[in-house]
Each structure stands twice: as C-alpha cells, then as structure tokens.
Amino acid sequence: MKANVLPLTDEEATVAIGYALAKICDRTSAIYLHGDLDAGKSTFCRGFLQYLGYQGIIERPTFTLVKRYTLHPLTLYHFVLYRLADPNKLQFIGICDYFMQNVIYLVKWAQQGWHILPKADLSLYLSYYNQGSKAKIQAMSSYGNQLIARIYGQ
Image 1 (cartoon, rainbow, N blue to C red):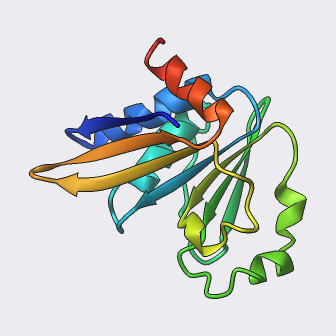
Image 2: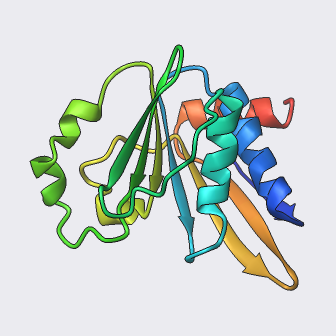
C-alpha cells in the first residue's frame, strides 16, 4: 500500500493535513491515528472537523471513548481508546451500533481495539524528529490508495 511522509513545521501544518483529508473523504472511511501523547492527533482531528463545518469545541473523548459529530451529509465518530484496558468492553458500549454508512471514523490508539473496529482505510503516524514533527500517511485499503492519490493529484 502507498505511504507518504510530510514534514510538519507547526500546528497549522497539522491542521492543514486534517483539512486535506477531510476534503477528499467522500464516503464511509476509517482513519487510524498513531503517535505519542501530544504528537498532534487532536490537532489533526480539529482540522478535519473544521473543514467539515464543525465550529464548536472539539473535545478529546478520553473518558467517554467516543464523541459523535453529526455533520451533513456525514456523521463523524472520534474514538480515543487510550484508556481502554479490555477491548471487549467496546461491545458493552454498543460499538457495533456505530458501524454504518456515511460515517467517518477517526480512531486514536486503535491498537487497543483493532479486532473490533472497522478496517482502516488510512493510518496516519505522527512523530517528532529533529526540531519538528512529521506525518506518515499510509493506505490500508484500496480506498486508502485512492485517497492518497487524490491528495497528491496522481
């Protein structure tokens, strides 16, 4: 699958990646977000949601595990599974009820529940290097390959 690495010079560059991906996600898709604490995952989500027209405060659903954003024509679910000790507990919150059409999933700490979650179309790896940060975007499905091709105009 395709992968691309982008340097992130500042917070606005991370927001811009969120904008760019939100602009091209036009159907049900899952994006897994990877990276250390404070690597920029929430900043990416903010950019993604702002592009889709959300103007409120973007909460980190660390304790609730999931936050729903009803946007037209899509619904977005923002999962943060950082504190999930037992992936089977996702069944107790009715996670299967979240799996539907016209939904975008932004999932942080997906490794905590990967076997229950929808398969990722893209994985975004945010990390620090030298004096800045970088983002690696990797396609995980054929739709993910299409998204990367759209980003780079291929």
